[in-house]
Image (cartoon, rainbow, N blue to C red):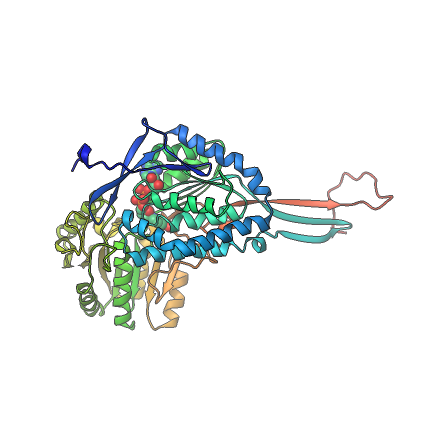
Length: 506
Ligand code: NAD
């Protein structure tokens, strides 16, 4: 439905450049920002033109030498102060997230906690960035190697974790001595500006972290900007693939994390109450708008009927509604996305699946104008259907029945994506086999959403990630640094002579 001019609110969400909010003024393109639980436009976000991107990158480039050369101790003090401020004021950030994304408040606090975990890991950077030293590799010769920051790093993030995904990257990038230009999703842009302002309050020098809002125009300008050294992207697979190609062609290092279709394999010996709880939590948390959501339950027969009954029983108790009212599940991000997700339920019916629980008829505890779709359960989804092959990114859980563990693993491995998966069983041997046989980057054993903790790294395989370095953990530091190796000889008096040969070991 087109919005009338009177429905456009006054609030404009500015960029954050050089330690201050920046609104490019009257000529700027604007994007709509909604409260998805109300269904109404609550603000407009300024969308960057290439000149705005230039300004943010120039600010980050100017700030880089001093930030790189600031002592580790000073960098640590600033980031520790940011951690303390965030900890004290996270409820404020959670309210912003719920107001623009729609996820329920405890879930918004959960995403902040997971982001903070990466920050806390990154605070240990002096240990990680120590480098290495080898004494006397040849007579009188020592070698040491050490990491240096890469420069200006672009971080481009999706709508579904407006605080956590930026925090997978910028704490590590900053700790390693880089400066950052963050381009958050234009659908829920305020969390990024709030974080940038808090970093400034914590003492981060101006220009070390900038935020530019925008769409393809801003992203394209970042991907080819001569002063951007590295690009970290998270979003859907088609855009991730394009970002990877474009930025790599422009000579940048790139990590581009894409979409997912995560399967949960249930063996006949599994505890079905545990499995039903896990399927509901992982399928419908954040309305299924998580890249690690479970979207397919692969039930090894004869468990499917019993599992469906237990799952449907739990779903009947879920409250869908406004995330500020103590509900279990909030709305979807936009009306268009809600309608797209609902269209997969129609398609499932056409393709011969059974709709066990239909979320289209949900009665929400919230404004009727909100972007509502209730939890939906589909059985016997044909693996040829787009409902099975495509990422839906909503509260739609499909069940596929298979005859054996082997058939289940073959199915998982035949898919395009390889982000997360889980096995539910009491059989340790089967779980051990699974983790070696499955072609997926993050695996849970009786854990439905196996997001690695901050000191391991996050990333999928196949169409779920382009590039060879995962996010955060030691791989994150690897991405945000490049190494120098120095070979040193301090000759003793009298040393000299000419020898054109290659150094020998004798
Ligand atoms: P999206 O791909 O639409 O957008 C991601 C970012 O790219 C945004 O900042 C957006 O402004 C920008 N963008 C959009 N279209 C663009 C274009 N044509 N050219 C250049 N940039 C463009 O993704 P989304 O809808 O915001 O987020 C949901 C997707 O992100 C899902 O596919 C989900 O699986 C994925 N995701 C993946 C992970 C992971 O770790 N693998 C984590 C979170 C989300």
